[in-house]
Image (cartoon, rainbow, N blue to C red; front, side, top):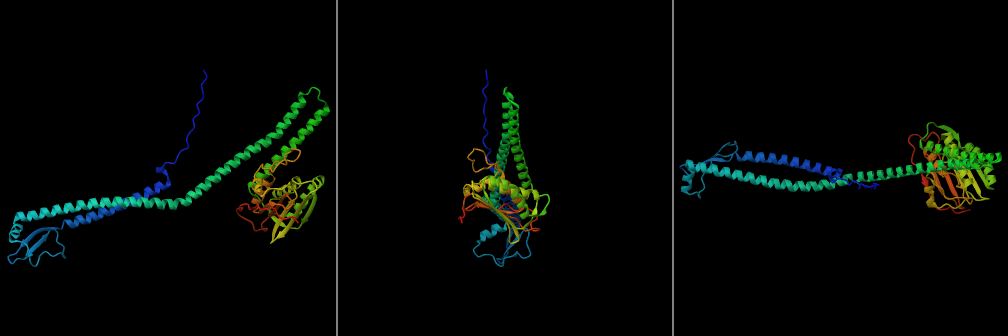
Length: 409
């Protein structure tokens, strides 16, 4: 008899109110108030009890009608003798108070009154302390919430950023695995097909090997692009002065044949502009921009490449006349393995790593990246490098500006 599996779903763990920071702070405030309030009441009670022990102990009446009062502990400033007894005191009461039993009654009544007063003080003090403890707890709750509000905001943003980074990393690994697997699958299919063909000729084997070499070259290009992306995110190990205009001229010269094959017009304007950074990474940035402008273009279109100086900073710009790119898609295209579409033959145009590598290299060099749709379709991309010998320390965040299409003309 087969066993049926049981799926158990664990409910998300809810935060225990007793363990939250706000509750802990509130309890801390309340406990501190209770301790301080109890200490204050204890001191007050001790002082009152001490004062009660110095009450009247003996009342005497003289022959001339004067009355005297003696205390258990008579301070120097407390009078111990009345000038004259009150006239309202009856003679019989004077006689009773002057007797030993009367003096005992005075002491007993005074002591009972002291006990009653102290007991009433205890009750009223406890009630007042409880009320103030509740008020202090409420105020502590409000103060803790106000103090922790920025911390909660930072925690929520940090959690959101962490979740976004984790999701992005997971998507990147999945996409990279898929992209690396595709050429291997194609090569394996080609080899299995030619091996299983009993009528295969040497020419067929050679054609299959050529196709396998093409797939291997694509895989090599993908691995090279992934390494460039990793180097861009990893920062710069060393810096050297680089003539951006001269470097761009070499890249354009190498890509001119591809532009002519696509019947594209190259418009190149280069000036000497020195930047500091990694020569290999900056060369990869320039190569990706030029290749993207050529690859994502229309037959007979234009590609304009320029390097100039602006306020002492080296600026490189690339503009093409390719398919229109919506402004809302630019942020997505800066992520790895993101493409705008497919060409007419169904072949994917690149690996979707071009602009992400450009963004990573620009960030590593502290350059500002400005991307927005071009007036005649395509994209306008400008990379503004910092002044030479100026950029040092931590790399500032990448600056990306997305605008609406510029007017043509």
